[in-house]
Image (cartoon, helix red, strand yellow):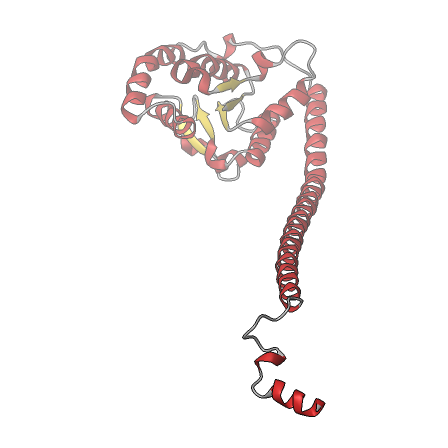
Length: 274
């Protein structure tokens, strides 16, 4: 299962990269964490690849800090995730925030939340395991306790905000990417209903063709069986007719129903001759 990890800003990116590296320790090959800072290959179009990964993801984790609560990019990715993934499987990972910091007017408040501590991280791990069913409950607890200290140490030792740097893009570049993704999403929303309708029509036509073929096969089978019955009946009646004709052509034996067997016939014949 692909796990899309969304980020915006230096601290958010650092935590996202920590999760990207840490989660496979617990789930090995059953999950595939994806993050744009590491998984977009050279030569690939960033916005197109992000759109494809959003669409193919089975779960989303949003690395949320006090720096990106209203960041346009993370708001956009969160919105895209909610279209492709059940909202119960999209969660915010609160790095330096309290739940009360998520204003009800903020679209991110609609998602499940987990704090970046032992209990919150265990909650995310359990959600993933419920989907991929990688470990029994008892084993999952042991696996989590084994690997949690590593992530906990990294989270406690995050550099101050001023020491974290990422390559900044201009506002025009960010807006251009947002518009490109929005156009792609709009195209997807407008085309998908037509595609689904066409697929349903094709499925209906195929079903009708299958039904027609089945009817023809049954009709042909019934016709063949009927012909066999007629042929057998014809042979049987023909044999009886031939036997009856043969018996009718045989001469009458004595004691049969010929003239000699009728009493007084010969005497009457003689008297008539005299």
